[in-house]
Length: 407
Image 1 (cartoon, one colour):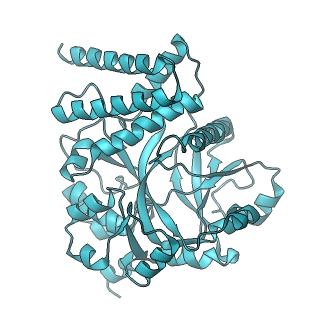
Image 2 (spheres, helix red, strand yellow):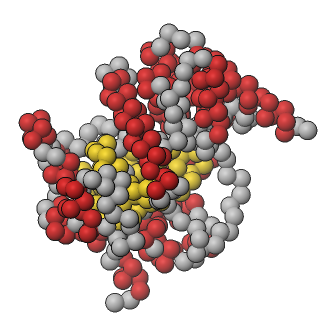
Image 3 (cartoon, rainbow, N blue to C red):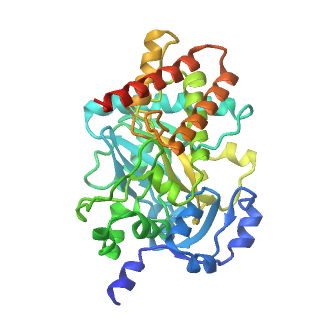
């Protein structure tokens, strides 16, 4: 087998097999999501592929060795294993093959309080989102929160500790939640072709074959423009947590205003329903598997998180915007100290939000759209004047930053 074929065996191939009929039966095919068929994929330029898939309005049918592994393990728990798919300052995330479930373990004993904070804030935010979904149309996805496990959780660790890699500190504390799946190979290939430097493109096959580049999620940076591409070291550069800048979205003709609206309403709900400052949260693009059979309400009641995961068909994927990482979030009070807290959380975060500091016409429009939507949603949730003060403080800091750049 030649090198190209060998690499492709672990990659996603795109098939139309039973897709239209199956998806129509499950109700997944809707006005919101349109199927991106293989014949159109084959004819599309990489830019067109990214524009269509990152619009969050299309889905595809895929097959790969990893997809097959998930589908086989779905009905056979003995084949399940835990694969490391991400590591941050607080914890390491392991995907449970064959389910939509991940386990996040602390990186060290001193990180356990942060992981517990992540669990508590995640629960507060998820509850707030559920409470407002009848008032506000939500376009953000948040992973489901399943359980908090401790070293005394014998049922969980007895069944699962042997499936973790040997390097993992199993029988520890763990946060169990649903998984944000990575972007399919179709999208990862297009990212390399369109958004990566020539030094990466030159070794495209080898680069995409690395495990860390299969766990690809996109960070949506509406507050930063990429002015020049650097020539990164191929060995250190990764697609995991890939930054997509606002000018790159514009070049792809993505609807940046739609992204701004999603971020604005999400932040408003965090502030004025959950009472959470949003410190260090992340807005990412990731994929979701199809439910192979939509369970009835009585079936959902009877099943646990593991058996519900068995219903997922990993060979069909759509891309959505997700909100993750709550370990540095905190509650705030509606007073001057609380106002400073939420303003600091906004300005110190990575540049997901539109920025009033940016001065181009497009950036000004994007900030206007964000500002408008944030205040609209806040007005539904509270009669407090603090949302307006929050926006005013953000704009005040933006003006100071612009004046500072002149000297």
